[in-house]
Length: 192
Image (tube, rainbow, N blue to C red; front, side, top):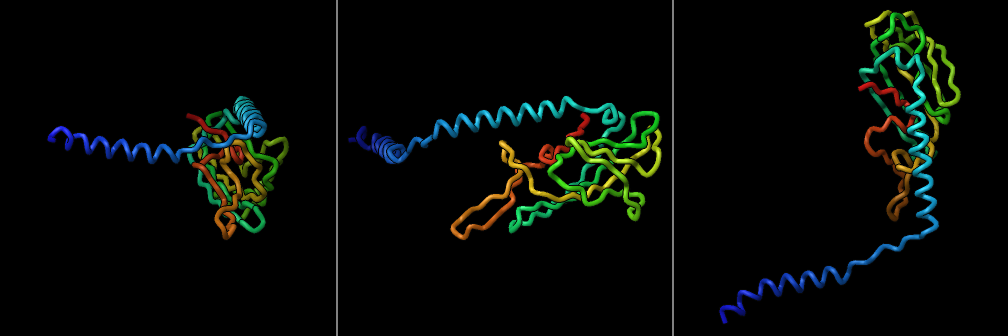
């Protein structure tokens, strides 16, 4: 009798285990979609790797020491507006231009120097490269402070780091951001 009572907790655990495992379902996977997703993911990471390997000589002339990112999503239009402030230290003997990897799909509204915000800086933006003409020639060890305002529709990315998404019965739209990933905007000049 004593042995039977000691088996009751084990039997209860076993029954609970059976109940929960009987409801487990294997997810249905569409093989075509899975293959397409794997190919997209491989292409995305190859492009990301290639972008990181294409650091210009100018990007070696400074060290970014601070990023401030301010984002404003508009769920009705799927437009993302943002502003990034960058503080960098000059590593070369002098620097009058700053190059950043910046996706062409995002339109630049304005670029200013934090030191003189009333003056807009001139720039060129093509082939995912943003080249900014600085307000003066900076010497080695000096800090550059630049603010870039931009807007656009984020490109779909396989890793879902940026996307507008629909959820719930009310079909609310939400901007999904996984971590602070500057690769979405292709501002990828990081020095460690």
